[in-house]
Image 1 (spheres, rainbow, N blue to C red):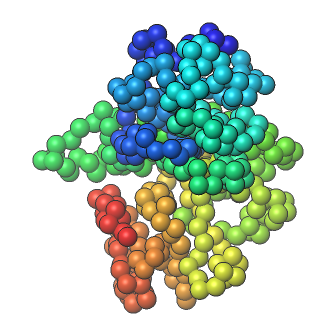
Image 2 (cartoon, helix red, strand yellow):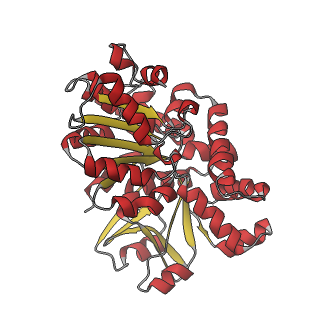
Length: 388
């Protein structure tokens, strides 16, 4: 075990390690929280860059604290099978002769691999002088176990690269005087998406393997699903329907399975951060629940690999959704007309490089919402940063 711990923590021997390309939009917030007591859960889609962010935090932390006060653990590592978090930390203390009141920094990758992780983290939080960062690719496990950690934790979800990050990872620098060249790069971004390793390598096999891992390891295996074919087909159907309204009953008819099965499978896709769904803007809870949902994917590059690079309007709408995802968006539908997103009192209509026709424009302008935003190109996405 000691050899494995040294292998995972090269800074103990002053060895260099590669923290990757910094994602400053997340890193600053995460590093600023180093002196706070709360447990920070870093969540998001498999292979979206959670592990690299943990290592980037460590890279920053090494400027401030002694290397041997930092422990990084990959908790799905075979050597650690049947070991509790406490047992691994005890081994860490023994190796470096840490006292019980020494301030330690713990980075626990894929923490939900450990049974009863939530009780272990609660005990560490309550009884020891530690700062904990933990990652997980399972939203459902974090939700179901969070009662133990109420008031002790915060969750930061990591999304695929946005356009500015895509340019950074692609090594593209465009001067303001050549701003017109950004349109071409944005078209590339619409096709490739924002999975960090895929942006760096353009290896389609990497994307296919990632989705295979999610479907077979995180969904089918975890939930002991026998009907693998329906899960695979549902994934493709959802890819084809991004930005469109859907009902569980319609999908059930297409797949010839029960509505309950479709509802569960969609829930599993959402729990793995692969897809998101939003509800209709309505006055009553019953109306919201009964109305069709709209579906979006976490990364448009994944969608393009499996169903082809088409319908740029839907892809751009998906990017708009990701920009406002944390603001509880809904869609508006009335008299057979739709407004793409409602955020609080703001209506947002997405028309990628298109003019809105007169009838739609009249409906949009006469809607009851206080603020109205028309999003037509990537520069318009910046308007969404001003939403309160």
